Image: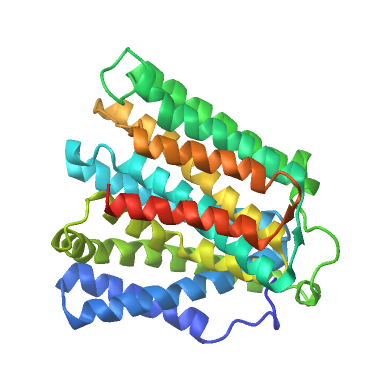
Length: 361
């Protein structure tokens, strides 16, 4: 998994330090112009550093624990960012959690997954994966998505796409139960569903890193991920201004921020697919989508029940159609245990439709 040895290159720990220095500078000095370009470049560099450290940790702990580490770490930090913005933004940000979760699903299940299937199909023609693992993930993902993002539109206890407090509590608990059940199946009861299929590439047989090296990389992974989210938040005002000047809907900002936050997972997943490790790609991609809902909804539910503020979760009709289409084609493209480039093209076209209709609603 780490590939090419276990020692971390100097840049993999220098870049996170520079990213943190830039992050502190942005929030203390509020510099703009050319410095924001430097911030954007550091953001890209720290994503590569995060991917490197995630691969070191994954090589040490093995599948599927390695992919779970990256998916959960990114999601926990993402949830902290969502909560901080929503609480400080008041009712104007009441739909931010919904928009971010939906964007994460579309990015993971169409953008990243489609790119993985396409790259894997181009380089390896066909790639095999465990059908049982994909089926479990899709079943949980479909239940989480429909219960959390569609059902609020059809309840009557509260007006509009909003849960009443008891319903919100139920949504939070059910989401947590579903996600915890999936993690238990992935790591304990049915771990074999998520292990690599057949012969593994030579790079996976490299000498695994020591416990000390893995611990250092785990720490640097967390530092890098916090820097990714922090720099994305620092760039968000400039992104909002650019989107507004272009006349695009405000929802585009959420897509861009979600894309920046998911960059480490996307890079790791596509790299694994190109290296003929599609099972690892699926673990990362579907696991990230599941974590995005399964961890975000319970946290938001608890906070907004405590604050007594409305939380908009129900999707609009257009987004609901895209969500149902995504789940439908996912059951088909991942329903045979083998992938090819045509399946990747299908997901990417749906992703393109999502992006286009977000800009031109």
